[in-house]
Length: 158
Image (cartoon, rainbow, N blue to C red; front, side):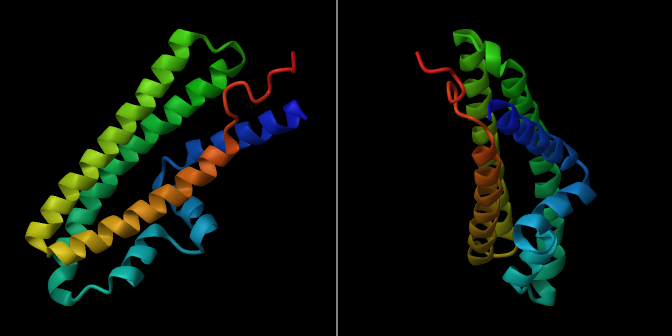
């Protein structure tokens, strides 16, 4: 059973690693929501012509930064998978601190984007985007976390 679950985790990591390219990320979001992320944002936001150009410029800047954070998250998850069977106190601390740092960086990006979008589009539109982005991020994060075993989950009973 352990081998089957670890194989599934490795498969999830492979899919997550491929999400680094735009095409593969679109496929990942489409598998979760049935459409590309950009299409979801477009359909949800229903931007006017006046809002559209400014919004999409800010969105593109946001996405570039968010994708870089995604690469860090994948690297941290991969490091956890690589050290799962031999996890030490120091390695566990390092991995959790990396996770906190990535989450903090993501929150700062959302705050920066909200502030910029509030100023250049409107606070209401910025809040709308931030809420949608949080929903998408949390949905995908939940799927990934569901595939990752908890520390000690596969330890034999003593």
